View: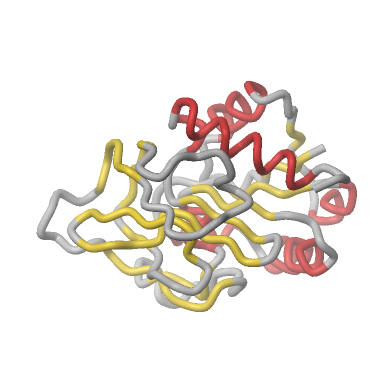
Amino acid sequence: MLALIDYGAGNLTSVRKGFAAVGAPLFTPACPSDLRRAAGIIVPGVGHFGATGGLAEGWREAIGEAVRGGTPLLGICLGLQWLFDGSDEAPGLPGLGAIAGRCVRLPPSLKVPHVGWNSLRIPSPSRLLEGVADGSQVYFTHSYAAPLTPATTAVTTHSAPFSAVVETGDVFGVQFHPEKSAAAGLRILSNFVRICSPSG
């Protein structure tokens, strides 16, 4: 079963509904040790990067240990930003550090926060995006974004380009909300479920 982390910043109900739609019920671990029985881990989130402070050291250690042991990890929206070293939104608060780089505020030349549908540019193959067409529309709502890095597997532009999807090893992240992104989003959730299965 997949673990959905509740640190007080995620829209857990919609994420649960999205995974239920692809036949994957979730459980919410009560303590970090519960992650030992998880086939995959999901870190959702909306709002300020400071909310990730709810992922106290015990959770950070348990998530890091699980990933090092081969358990797939998916960060959604704020959860993607937490995969990086940190964010200018809360400069003193570290992220997980699974991907090098810092998240920065979107340029103000267009409306911020960025809310609405934008297309994905998918320049290279990705396990998480298998079967998702280049140019697919997905739903965003955020003010900060991750830089383009070697882990970037899909790009969106809102005044400037940023990482819409990242993937490195068994660590995955999406800046948008797949549970609110119609067929393309459900395909991404289904792909993550498949990645978490024993056959991978």
